[in-house]
Length: 208
Image 1 (cartoon, helix red, strand yellow):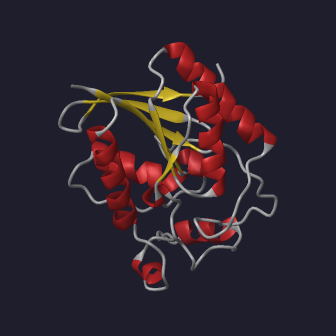
Image 2 (cartoon, helix red, strand yellow):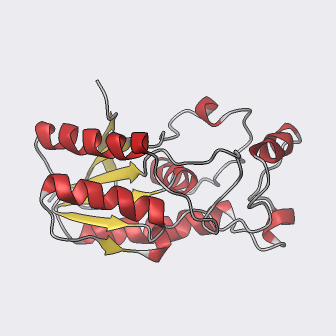
C-alpha cells in the first residue's frame, strides 16, 4: 500500500539580527510565517489528501506551525518528535549568518569535522535521525505530515533520493542556490511505495 508523506518546513521567523540559530536558540514565527502555514494548509486541503497525523519538531517555531496546520485540518493534536528538531550547532549558534558564508567560501561548513569536535552534529547524524522518523511515519498512518527545519529536511531528501551516497557539504553563497532546498512555509508531498522509496514528489507553495 502506497503512503503519502508531507515534509513541511516551519514558517518565516523573526530574526532581525540575522544570526545562526539551529536548535539551541528560540525563534518565533512572524505574522507572515503564520499566514504562510494557514495558506499552505488550505492549499493542501483543496488538493484532497489531507494528513491524518502531524508529527512535529519540538522547537517552538515548528510546533506553532504544526498547530496552525492542525487547526485548518481539524486534527485534534500533534505529536512532538525530538529527532525532527533543527540541527544542533552550538559551535556557531549566535554568530552572524555572514560567518557561515565565510566558511562556505573556504569549502567547509558548520557540519565538518572541525565543528563536530566542538559539539555540532554531523550531516550524516542528522540524516540518520531524520530517516528513522521518516521510516516510522511510513509504517504508521497512510498520510502523515512531518514538520521540521531547513537543513534536516534537505539532508533527509538527499538520503532518500541518493541512497548510499554521502551528504555533500553545505557550501553555498546563499541558501536559495541549493536545488531542492525547501523554503520556509513550503512543503514536499511525497508518494511512497511499500518499501519506502519515492514514487513521486510535488513541491507545494503557500501561494499560487
